[in-house]
Length: 316
Image 1 (tube, one colour):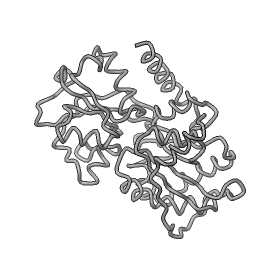
Image 2: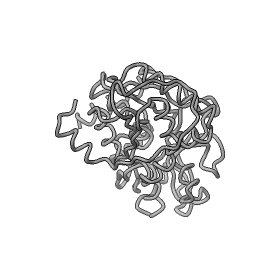
Image 3: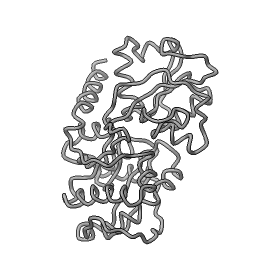
Image 4: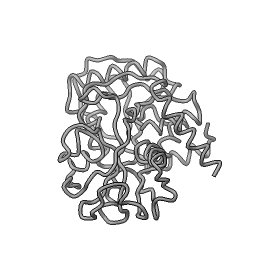
């Protein structure tokens, strides 16, 4: 657990947002959270611009307030670590992590948070992919072309932006520490692709659903978000590698909240998906077939991979 000073630092690292929620018609599961705390605090990973995160999730706020009967407050963070520290420090009630982010928290304190639910892809898959991309004009067409060139990671706590690709590439005989001339952490998925487009790296990893149209950036994922924002043209890049299927990251909630609060969140997300599909799509960063309850067992393989990665780094 984190001491008081760490909690203060985590709080100071946050950019705080709160908006006046518009009234919504909501007939899904409810509870009176005011018996336990005065507000519901939502944290967002710092993998895209804060204003874009808030705009995309603004529709979610009135549903939270209708379901829990307390004001909702949104917080964004500069990186994954800040979100993880704040959640472990007891300063957040909800966030949506990648599998590796959840694994990192679990390894620090297995009793602090629980996975509550995740999304199912339109195809029925319960996962997504890490992909490496390069600019079309570079002439790079495969990972073999990248030997001795530069490579961009998203964030050290990202599943698809570091953990999985670093492990799978090494297993392919491409140890990132020696195969590339240099590597860098770009500060999130969007920044990593922007670093590629700006010529800071020769290739970069990010995440995609792996289904849907390439021209649209697939059905969901970082490339889709960037296309929708008008800051990426898929004709300008090529995909040169894809990982195996990665378990979709969980929405996590702290264990200090009553189990009923977790159940309300599951029911609320499912209700929004059925009754306000546009909001559900905005919050999910893309098209979702449905929201599915999950528990720790769904992420045991990722926890084991992250633990092995940590132990390997200690031995180097």
